[in-house]
Structure formats: C-alpha cells, structure tokens
Image (cartoon, rainbow, N blue to C red):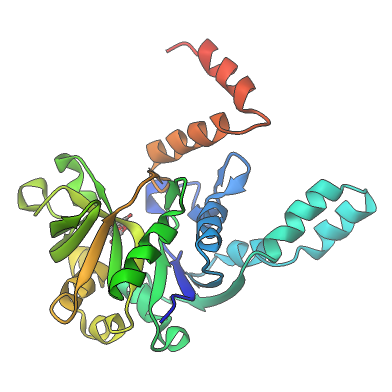
Length: 287
Ligand code: G1P
C-alpha cells in the first residue's frame, strides 16, 4: 500500500530554545526567512506525501495560520501590485492538505503518534520530526520510500553520531545488509555511551506500518517518563522486520541552539540573493 499520509508531531515545548519558544512554536523560528517547518513540509511534498497531519499543542495556532490563506495580507499585496510576494504567500496555503490534531498533554513522541490513529487507519504512514531539517539532493523521505517499496516494512532514518552523543538519540542495534541499508535487531532510547549498542542514531524521519498503533496503546512510559516511539518500534521488531537507512544528506538539528545557528549560516550562504554578501561579511568577522 502506498504511503499517502505524513504525521508531523510538533507539540513539543521547545525547552532547548527558551525563551524564544515561550510564546511561539519552535518550528516557526525562521532559517533566514522561512520557518523551519516549511523546509520540512517541502521535503514531504517533494517526496510525494501531501496529506499532512500536524499534532499540535496549545499555543501553536501560528502553524495553522501559516499554512492557511492570509486574507488581509494577500489583499494588501494585491492592492500594492506586489505580485512576487503575493505568489509566494498564496503558494504556501496551496502546498498541502493539512489537518490538525491536539495532543492535550506532552506525554512523549509515542503518545503524539497515538493521537492520529483514527485518521491513519490501516495504512503505512510517514513521520517527520520538525527539528530535523535535512539538506539533500534526493529528499530524505523519498530515499526511505524506495526502501519501503522494496520491503513493505517500517523504515527509520539513520545517521552515525559520536559515541559521546548517544544519550540524545534513539540508538539501534543493526546488521548492514546492503549499501546504507540495515536490518534492525533492537533499539534503545537515549542510552549512555557505555550502554549504546552502536553509533547509529535514529533521525527524525520514519515510515511506520499501522501495527505500531496497537503496540503504542500498550507501551508503558519509558525514558524521561514519556511514551517513547523508540520503545514501540523495538516491540514491533518482534512481529515484523524493521529497516534502517543511512540517508544521503546533511541533517541540521534546528531544535538545538548551535544546530540552529549552523543551519542559518549554511542556508544563508546558499541563497542566491544574499549568499555572496553574507560570505563577504563572514570574512570580516573577528574570531
Ligand atoms: C526523538 C526520538 C529519538 C530520535 C530523535 C531524532 O528525540 O525520541 O529516538 O533519535 O528524536 O531527532 P527528541 O530529539 O525529540 O528528544
């Protein structure tokens, strides 16, 4: 069955980015002039997944408004003949078919995914974590969909990380079966380096089979007292194969202050309009 729907769990409180995230969703912070979430939605659209379910929390209406029509703004731009800006703004509201579900309490990523069960039904679906912005020639999700097409099993995106970083990620135990492709044997959420089964970290892109929902319903709170998606996928492994794909691309962790700054610099340098001026400016910065 084709992967038609994507889930974007965006209800996180953005505690790594306070106070900027006190009154706005962290995925609405801009990388140059586009909110983080827009880059991630672009990846979904470029991969052919246009039905997007956002799992939001209180105080996140900015995301809904962003993907909706902005009537006054469009009217204003039209009246001033600002056609480029008008095209840009109205294009956003036509980008996706969106739907919003509330996660009433921040009980973890697994809990966020449980909120969409009734909208997904019995289909495989994609999950995009908004913090991870992936810059790649072929969209990361498209790379993963090719693996899904081959095996019709769940797939998680993988990246090698420093051993000292394992406590920030889900870490897998896996056998390499092809170039970039791993068959998973287990996984642990945020292990200390000495307990990590490998240096292969799960990055915020998943394709999941619908069997995950039954498992999630029974998953007890794990690391940090939250219902962890990693624990549910680990249990899914007992029933069906799960693959990991070492995607080709560069991942920016924009939920982290340093990651956000690095992504800002990279994206600004790559811009046609301001890239060269920004490069010249950086050369003058005293380090
Ligand atoms: C989540 C997952 C973790 C994964 C990470 C990728 O953690 O729980 O397994 O490695 O995303 O970004 P979070 O960063 O939301 O704490």
